[in-house]
Length: 145
Image (cartoon, rainbow, N blue to C red; front, side, top):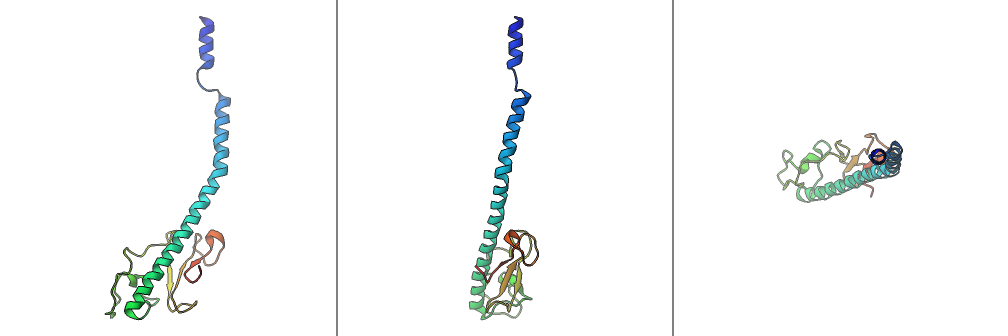
């Protein structure tokens, strides 16, 4: 009877060493996989930003077809949603929803006339919100694919 109790007590539960081994394996897995998953999130934001810039370019093209010109810097992208004063040829809204923020939660920068051709310049300042940068901090711009 004593041996039976002792055997059951030794078999019950998980030992501290077993728990440490499991926690170590989980920590190693998180250390290897975690950064890769975070990097995918940054890449997804960059792709989403590029997609939004393409949508703006399409809407701006339709705006120009109707009005004969692009919105001024003062009117900005908001002219794609709300008729600017004195513009009777406006047939918008040219975007189905309100102007989105960039994937990092900041407004897009719009300039017309642009400095990179005949079309407006639209810029997202990337993850850091500062001009320039590299990688995920690089500016995402409408004039470069």
